[in-house]
Image (cartoon, rainbow, N blue to C red; front, side, top):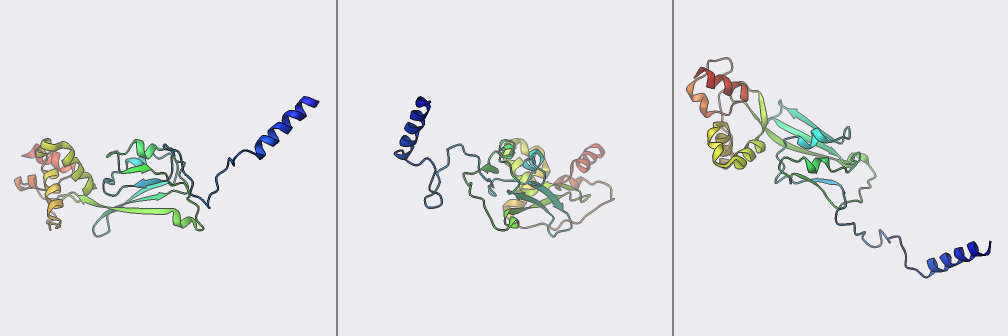
Length: 202
């Protein structure tokens, strides 16, 4: 019985003269490891609102997406509730632009009201200029144009989307739902269905 007691005494003395193992937060800031997986942060400069992060999020209610076609202009609303996030990193790993959302080093996420953990981001939607169906976000079309480079010239919809973005002025386009396709429809932003009908008939 003597040896175990001596070992415990040695551990106690060592602990007394050793530096603290725990941090002194909040008196001093906590430094997290380099690859720490903290709160996901949207980079609104590069996020295109495609919804890829919403589709791969495994936590119900953490990331949600809603298309409001009745708004003026129509918008896609992506809501992030980081109080339910499990910090798995799927959103970052599957981001279309690779930098639209990323896990940050922010770990102190305590709040007094859970409503403060809700973040909402709106992205303007692009509707088909012939039938009015939703195509996607305008930022997504512009990103595709820039990604495709010279190949984008084969798609008039992408060219017009980029041109509208450069001028920063919305164009008033008369809806022609139900009318026969015209040659002039080639220079409009069309959904895949209307574009297919246009190519087949003309």
